[in-house]
Length: 69
Image (cartoon, rainbow, N blue to C red; front, side, top):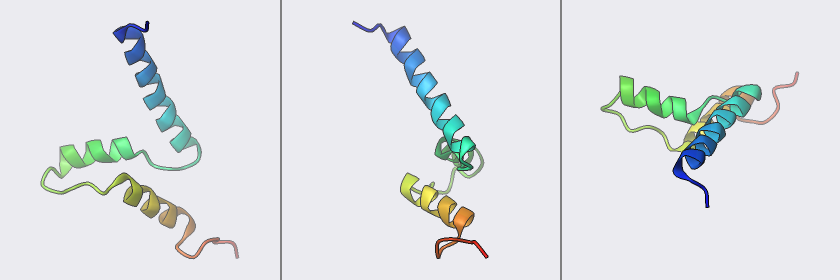
């Protein structure tokens, strides 16, 4: 049986690794975006996670696919 302390450590490690991998590939963190929205724009509804990453991919690669040449 896993105790709560160990389970919390595993959850924290997962969150940190998730943020690390997003930064590694140049993707922003949805968790940080939601934190920012709650703190700085409490009157606005944050984008869904799907819309957030869709917009991030469009900003990074453009809407039509490759930016090459």
